[in-house]
Image (tube, rainbow, N blue to C red; front, side):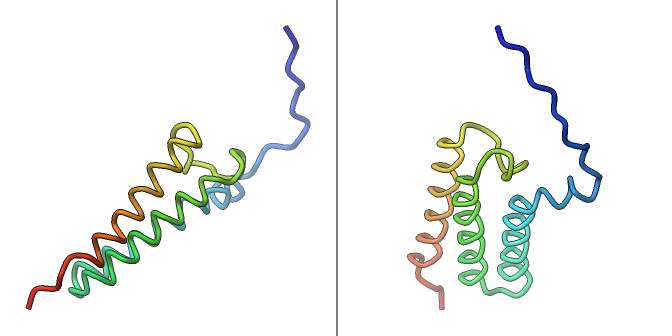
Length: 102
């Protein structure tokens, strides 16, 4: 059995740790803006499209290396990517297939 090589890098500061979570923050921000547009403003198609685009972008961001993706990584890379891309594309398709009620 091999012994692990000690990490010689200095520990990250709190600000570096928070800024390192930008992939998850960008997805959550996109979903938040989509919910705000869809809910109080009543533009559900635009809001759902923005939510779908944010989740799809999360699926593409999940393809980054494990050290860069931060808290966006929950499971295996393949499973996360398939679930996020499938959900995002599904939301996009549904937001444009549902006919408007008038």
